[in-house]
Length: 265
Length: 305
Image 1 (cartoon, chains in turn red, brown):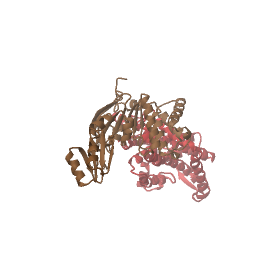
Image 2: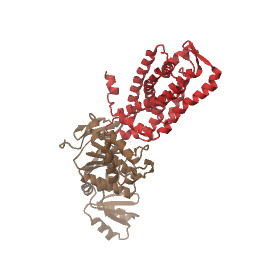
Image 3: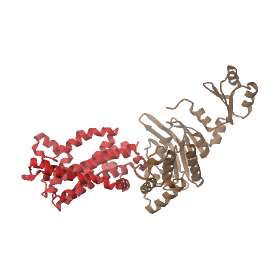
């Protein structure tokens, strides 16, 4: 457990203070902050339900035919989990770290760099939970979620959020300037957004591409979210959960190590 | 606790790769003292402060704050000190008051206590009417005062001020000086860095002069001036060759900077009298010796860039 201690040993309950700081900023404009997760699913339902869905009709998923809208809405929620956490701990954290020097100010108090990093990490995941919860309410109102299983999407968004927000912090630790975020955004995040079983089933892809898709974290999130929305267990669901749990721990550990290197000099 | 020095540094060293920013320095700061670190840019002052404050890891040696090893127990040290940083890192997402309240939370201060304390400090630093202002509405001097207020929130036993008045206008600077004096008179121990010699003379019981990561000399400001320079400085300009030759032949301690000759008068009065007699028309200025003279003599006149 030596590695565990070197990586996570300095993280304390004080990380919650950093989370609170971010939550306070968020709360000052909370109404505006709810617009995207509120309207995004409504627009998707209109565009894909009435528009594109009428062209595509149904998809075969897990052996049964389902309307395209029911297939893609879980994808939209999964993408939101990724975007809301990843972009929080890339662009927003970078601004706090580099332009506002907020982290430097906090490190002059009893908090250590590790508390700051952990606070940002949890905050990034919180943004994913908030987005997923709002969306769940909206798409639930359209009758696109099977309840009560659908409620499990909330804890699932926390787990997925932790994974993507840790990946965001890894990016932030390595980005020399804010413009460099374009590289991972367009080489990793946007391809993941499209090819993770979000908008079409991955088994229509060539074999090799299916394997690549299975290696991507968003694929595992979208499988689980879809299973919960449709109300039927995903085959191999424990493996998806294991992937996301281990992925969060590894990415979180990396985030702490790399961000510490950047912050503590 | 009281028998420990507020700061005790032994062979304190910081290296960044091959660059040695702080080179095995030894010093201590006593209770109730205001100690000034002087030095040109890059002397290692800020790095020293960062190591004392526990946010820059020490390469070698150690520093104890109230007897606590900073490397081993950074949280215990950071709880007891207040740091006013060189650059503005106020939180632009919050108002003036909210900045203080959020900062107090990092120290686990209960919100009832922190609100009272924050109001007192805003009063103390003449910021009460800016309570609800946004950070970007503040002038440079107000921001610096707010940084000082923030550093005082946890009622620190030791205050670290990194260039507290750099870039401020005279009014703002004097207000900060006044407040630092009040704090010092109230028994606080203060360590400040500056490259304003006047600031050091005004505020510090003791100064430590640094250059290139080392301590050049330390002592009380007036003693240092008397020892290193003397009482008076005579500056001559537009000097003729005869004057230059006379000064050279006189055995005085002097420096020639372009067409200016700067003579240090150890006794006081004698040099200016002789110049007056021999060269009554020579353009000259007679002034008291200052810490700035000590600084320039010891760290050289070349630009430190």
